[in-house]
Image (cartoon, rainbow, N blue to C red; front, side, top):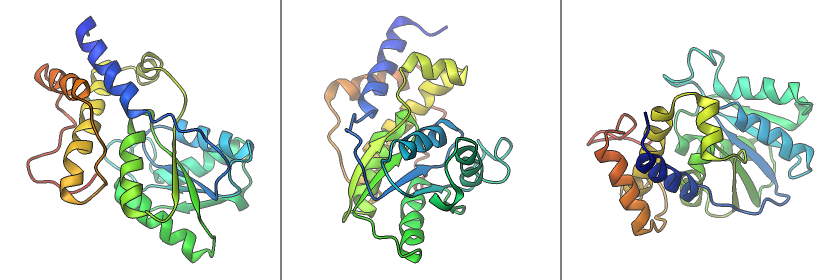
Length: 221
């Protein structure tokens, strides 16, 4: 049972992670692979709104997705987008990336190899990863405008879609930790994190939501 105090702290992290960028037409949509097919759904919806003429789906598999997406996250995303009416000619697949940094660098290289000029990118991620994805892209792709986007939904709606409140809170805590740690390791730019968000994060850590925290010595993921 999740207490009201824990739920409130988790909601603070959820709200903070969403950047609320105004989506506008860009050169390309990049959907970052994960367990969440909603990324593909949102990417397809943006394509149908004429937000970009091309999309890239990027991602191999992870311990979370290897059973549900055995052909790879990017491949499954492509199949979903085709089901939603996106033409195959508009989709590029990057099937090797295994972390957010690789999602960005491999997608950038793929677009360059395809001779597609890019001045602006809509990065579509899970709702609780918007800020982390933005910070990573600003570090690794600084020459383009970055618009961070995700499926519009509340924390409660996302928890209901996953069916495991504790797991979602663990993921929120892990994502916030990376925002704090990765800039020091050169994996992303540093973004300000308000004191009340730090306090909510520490409260959740103290309550035992630690399964997605980084080990003491780590590489980007």
